[in-house]
Length: 69
Image 1 (cartoon, rainbow, N blue to C red):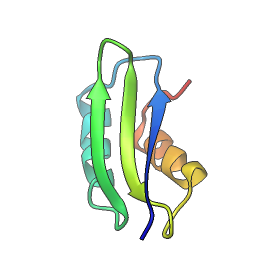
Image 2 (image 1 turned 90 degrees about the horizontal axis):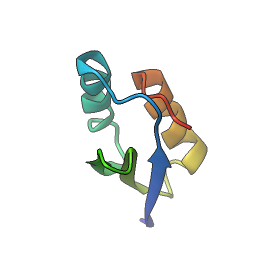
Image 3 (image 1 turned 45 degrees about the vertical axis):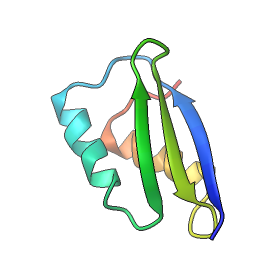
C-alpha cells in the first residue's frame, strides 16, 4: 500500500448535488481522505496509489461534478 496525497484546484464552488457526488467518492476502495480548502478553492485527496492513479482520482471528481481547473 502506497499512500499518496494529491491536490486539485476547482473553479466553481461545489453545490449540494456535487457534494453528494463527492460523498460517494469516499466509499471508493482506495480513497482514504478528502479535505476541502474553500479559500484556495482546492481539494486534497489521500489515496492508495497501488489501486489507482492521479488520472483516476481526477476522473472520479469530474464525474461527481466538481469543476477541476
